[in-house]
Image 1: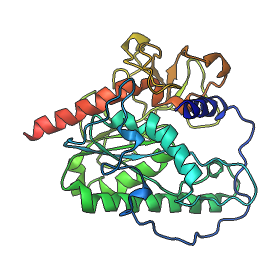
Image 2: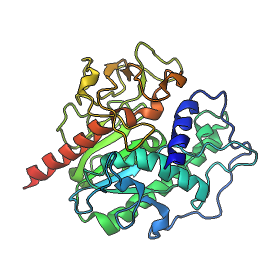
Image 3: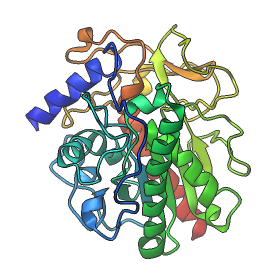
Length: 340
């Protein structure tokens, strides 16, 4: 755990301060294995039928209950950011080193935020390399993202066939996870019979327009159902010039769960979970919606003086971990109460 905590903080510090990400240089080529077998539990980073880091509870030796009446389908962000020559655009599903990194970072520090709301399903998928977002080789990047989405879609279809059984479900993703969660919701929920099972969608870390879906609308309160939530976090008073920022983009304030521009002080923050998973840091981070992004005053936490970036993307979930946990659980309760 100490090793992985150190790994995480180094990841936080350098993720957005490094000069350049080196990734695939050759044009995209199709992988040898076209379809992933999701009946194999090794192809799930989190699954109710195995012990995994999504079951863990910060500051406690207990693990999440498996006797829950709803499910969470969590799609993790980009962890594949290796540097080197001749890298594939998408890694092997059995890349042990990468899978360990996924489990020790996003599954532990992000997916676990939803484990009080439902059983967590988080597929391993052949994520597109981080450089796919910025490369000039747009055609290769498009194919890399398509393969990643196809894995996510196949995993979700397997989940629907063998595990859902009419249960309510939360869709949650961060960064590249949101890149795939949006199309997944369009394909399976938007204006379909499955829409009635959607508790809410947490589409965090990427710009999502308010009118992205046809019949699924932004959440406007902490208890609204069948709606979607989104935000991207930056340092207060900073407006990025390298990504879309305007009022057409949905921004949900994770401290009051509205979309208005009311400033919410850090005393409303139930707790961040950062470098040390077993340490909850309450009242550290504030929040305010501003022109398509979420502003947060830089919080103080161990080694925070080393973090100079004004982009808090890596902590979109971690800054508001306990509020997300409480809200997801609350929405499920409202959903189940309405059905009874």
